[in-house]
Image (tube, rainbow, N blue to C red; front, side, top):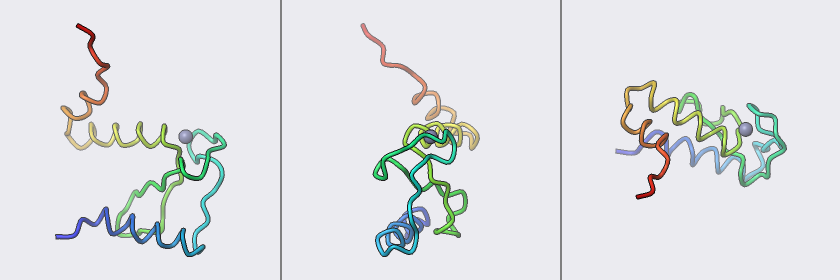
Amino acid sequence: MIDPKDTARNKLRDAVRRGRIKKPTHCSICRRLTEARLLHGHHEDYDKPLEVKWICVHCHNILDRDKLVATGHRMAGNLLNNKPVSV
Ligand SMILES: [Zn+2]
């Protein structure tokens, strides 16, 4: 089965490449000026592949981590929160 996430990402990438969608220059969450390659399209609804929030890598990590915890993937969320332990 094709992952709807991958389909949405491919459609978005294609639209950006063809110039149908223009990446902004700033993260829509923290408003920092961000290099285009570090600005990710974050899908809230994979059925709308071209509707994304453009956010920086840093904000994307936070958003995805929160989503993991919110959807019950507490272990994954906790693992991401854990800092490396030195022994
Ligand atoms: Zn940001």
